[in-house]
Length: 250
Ligand SMILES: Nc1ncnc2c1ncn2[C@@H]1O[C@H](COP(=O)(O)OP(=O)(O)OP(=O)(O)O)[C@@H](O)[C@H]1O
Image 1: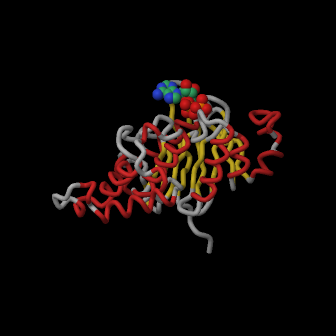
Image 2: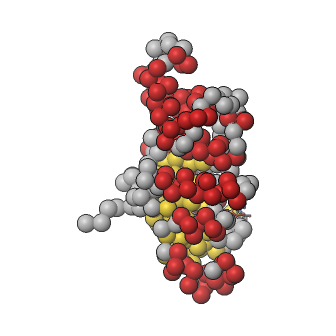
Image 3: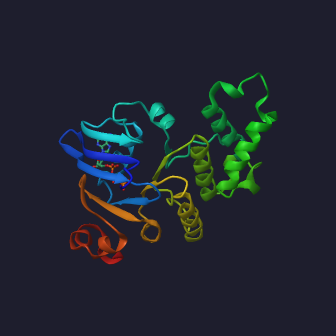
């Protein structure tokens, strides 16, 4: 029996006036995979991510996550169910250390069980869990550094540590390589390659080297429609994709 997808989007439609930003989008995310979503500027990639995480509501179609219809739930409820997102604009508390940022997430997940009037920074259990998350994303050595002083790539890693601490069962990553130099992109690519074993990744990314290195499957979005879904090789060979998007990259 094949495992059912972690995330399943069916026939999603989202219009802005006469514009169909999502025009019947169907795609899924399976356990252990990196599924990349590529396409030209304005194709509807961010709009799709917004609808999955709940910051925008679809006009029609369904979104199932971990076996549940989440299409009408709010952002916080979806996050509680384990939908982890990193943002193009960072959501970190910049003046807090990396460790403290993760501790806040561990605490948020645990709810009231950590709030026995203990000063947060002296709570051993909380500190240990947060340290373990930093270790997993390769930031253990940077625990005391304020988020604002971390490099762009390190901040992305920290956001992912937070998503892990919140118990994410899938990651939605919207252009994680944006604003990074080639070295940073390479490091983050290596990191994302290991992250897929924690939870599958839906990756919106313009950096084709990263996409080709990481993706198990690629979906190509053009004018709100998925024109092809397949492996890296299938997508590289697809004549419609070459015409619409890849051109010389293929
Ligand atoms: N809130 C909105 N109101 C009206 N039009 C919108 C809104 N958000 C997006 N659009 C339009 O929907 C289309 C899809 O935009 P979207 O940002 O999803 O594309 P994208 O593929 O993420 O582009 P990029 O690669 O440049 O980030 C665009 O034509 C955009 O102008």
